[in-house]
Image 1 (tube, rainbow, N blue to C red):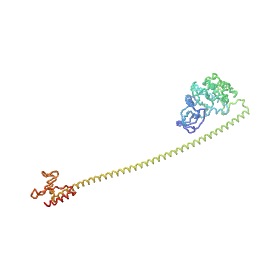
Image 2: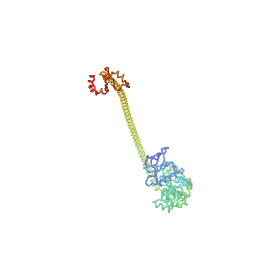
Image 3: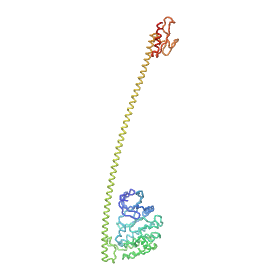
Image 4: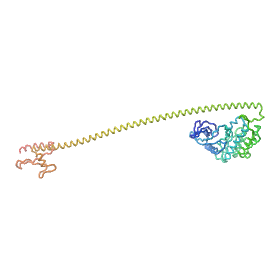
Length: 494
C-alpha cells in the first residue's frame, strides 16, 4: 500500500501513522462524506493465513459492538484486492493524539495525570468485559491520548469473546505483548477479564514509575511473571499513596482469584484516589514529574535538567524530521497529482485523436459508398437505356420484317400474274382473267381437271391440244425451258 491508493472506491490513503502485529494504520480521506478517518489494513505479508483474516474480521465485530467514549469508534469494514490477494481493512475514527507510550518516553507521569488516564482505561475495559470481550493486549501502545486529554483504547485485533476459543487464536501460542501478559497466559491456565486486569496493572505500574514491573528476554519475562513478586511502585517513586501501591499489587497478583474481580471496581478506586490527589499548580509543564523531596539534590537536579534539555532537543529534531517528512510527502503528492493530470490529459488527447480519425475514416467510407452507389446508378441507367434501345431496334426489325414479308408476297403475286400473262401470250394457257375465272382462288371449276386448262380450238376438238403448265418454281428455276423449247416445233407444226 502507498499514499494515493483508494480502497473500495471510497477511502484514499494519505499517510501511514502506525503499524501493529496484524496490520498497518493509515490516515485516509473518506470521499463519500469528506472526512478524515483511520484505516487499519491487514499487512500483505506471506504469513497471513485464513485464521489471520478471520481474526481481523472478528476485530470488526468486537470493536463495532462496543460503545464507550474511551473506546475507538468503528465506522466501516471492507475488502480490497491487491495483486490478486484480498486485503481486509477496518475504518475507525481518526484520533489526533499520540500513543501513551510516547508520553512515557521521558519518565513517569504526574500522579493526578496518571490516575486520571488510568480511570478512563479501566472504564473502557469494564465496558468491554460487560460485553464478554477480553482485550488480551492491554499496553501503552494500544492507548491513544488525544490532544484534549481524552483516552481511547484501540486495537481489539486479538480480543477474545466469551470463554470459548473459537479456533482463531490458540491457547498454545503466545498472542500479545509478554511484558504485560498475565502468568496464566503462558501456561494455558485459562483466560478471562482478570487477565486484562493484570495487564492493566503492568500499565499502571509504568504510568507511576516510568518502567514495567518486569524486564528482560522472553524466557526471563515468563519466569518473572510466574514466580517473582514485583516491588511496590512506591519503592521506585517515594511519596506515592499507600492505597495506590495496594491497588497495583492486587492487580499484579499471580493468582487470578486474588485480583479485583471487575474493572468497574478498579475504576471506582482509581477515581477516588484521583479526587484525593492535589491538582497541579497553574502552568504545570507536561515534562515536569512529581519529584520526591529526596531527589532535590543539586546533582540530581542538574542531571534532570540535562535530561530535559536532551529530551527537548530530541523532540525538536523529531518535529523537524516530521516537518521534512510532511513536506516531502506533500511534494510527492503534488508530483503524483501532476503526473496523473498529465497522463489524463494525454489520454484525453489520444482519445480525441482516435475519435477524429474514426470520424474521418467514417466520412471517407461514406464518400466511397456514395461514389459506388452513384456509379451503380449510372450503370443501371445505361443498362436501361441500352435495353430500351435494343427494344426499339427489335420493334423496328420486326416492322421491317413484316413490311418485307408483305413486299415479298406482293412480288410473288406480281410474278405469278406476270408469268401467267406471259404463258397466255405464249399460248401456254388462258389469260390471267380467264384463269382466275376458270380456277378461282380456293376452288376448282366443275368438269375441269385441276392444274389443266383448255387450249384454243381451231374448229375441231381433235385439233385441240392440252398442255400442262409449269409450276411457278419450275418457271423461276428454268427447269421446263428445255421441254418448252422441245415442244416449240410441234406447236409450230400445228
